[in-house]
Length: 127
Image (cartoon, one colour):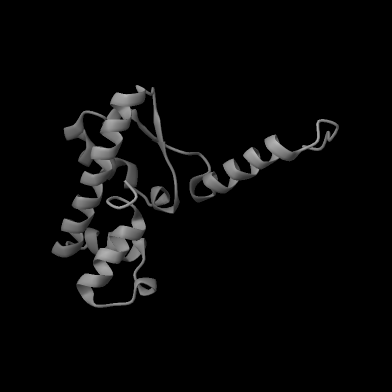
C-alpha cells in the first residue's frame, strides 16, 4: 500500500506530471485542482482511491474488522470521507470506514501512548 496509495506517492506522481519539485506539491493543491475539474488530478486521485480500495479490501477480508479508521491531515479535508466512501463503494467496504478523532495528530498520540506503556514507571501516577 505504501507504494500505491499514500499521499506522498500521489504528490510525487503529480509533481512528475507538471515537472515541479515534490516539496512544491501538496495534497491540498491536488485535491483543490481535483475539485476544480483538472483531468490529471481527477485521474491521479481516482488511482489513489483505487489503490487504497484494493489494500483496504484485502485487510477487511483478512482481519474482518468492525471499523477501519483512517487518519492523517487529508481526512480533515471537508468531504474527504464522503469522497472516499464513493470510491470504495465498488469494493463493498465503504461502510467499514470512519475517521480518527484526533486527525493528523492520531499517529503522534498513539506513539506517545505506546512509549508511555513501555517506559513509564508503575510508580509514576502523573496523567
